[in-house]
Image (cartoon, rainbow, N blue to C red):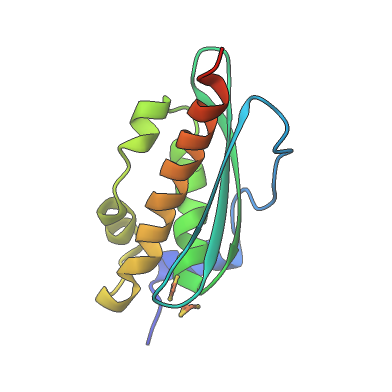
Amino acid sequence: MAYSDKVIEHYENPRNVGSFDNEDPTVGSGMVGAPACGDVMKLQIKVNDAGIIEDARFKTYGCGSAIASSSLVTEWVKGKSLDQAGAIKNTEIAEELALPPVKIHCSILAEDAIKAAIADYKNKHSSK
Ligand code: FES
Ligand code: FES
């Protein structure tokens, strides 16, 4: 199956690969797995005092579409509020990357990962 140019571009030049220190209170981490194929995606956000996502990192053990989806999402969330980032839909990711139907679950992984990272950040800050 052929990958779209955008998938290949992100796959060859992934943005924001790496990780932040999970102990950092400004960091939220989400790790999700795809039951369909066993791939794993870790996505982290760094949030400033104003509640805006300043930076993001990912590590993805998966196919090209999963890597491209996570790379794209780390770019999209920067400068967004938690609510705005949480509203990103997998369909927007799939459309941007022109993912074929069998690769839709790769974009769902990215949506789930950003939601998990936001939930983790909120969880860290709920007690104070
Ligand atoms: Fe897991 Fe895509 S099937 S790499
Ligand atoms: Fe499973 Fe892409 S994440 S095939």
